[in-house]
Image (tube, rainbow, N blue to C red; front, side, top):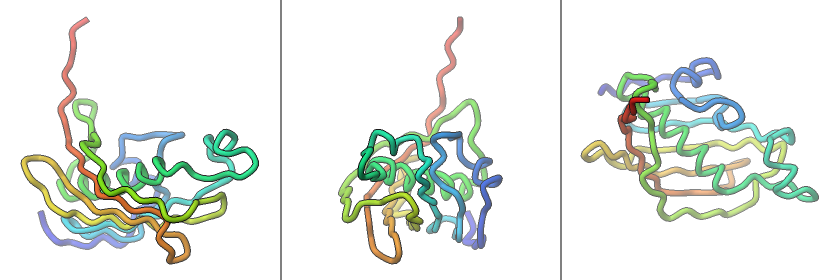
Length: 157
């Protein structure tokens, strides 16, 4: 694991490093990435997001759990890039825990979320991160997350 800094990633490279697909890709761009340390990513919040008609019809607010999921997706990109690997059909990157999640301000259509995730530590295959999501330099959410890369057990049919 080197401390190489990549300046950015577009959506095409993001899709190479995330197993998620529409409508669940919550990262639009990576602004910066320092292998083994941290990532800064962008989520552009559009009124066309599939959850807004139900959350809430007269005052659309991005669900806080999806902001945490966006932080986790940024963490996954950071981890895959740090490990110099990509998602595959034989493994999945799971949440192992979420601690200290706090939601400070609502996120609405038209907002651009800047997501900063730092690796806190890696121990026995469990990656621990600290994430902060901001809109216009104001913190809207923060959380500590743990994730693990697990092999998918194949079952015979």
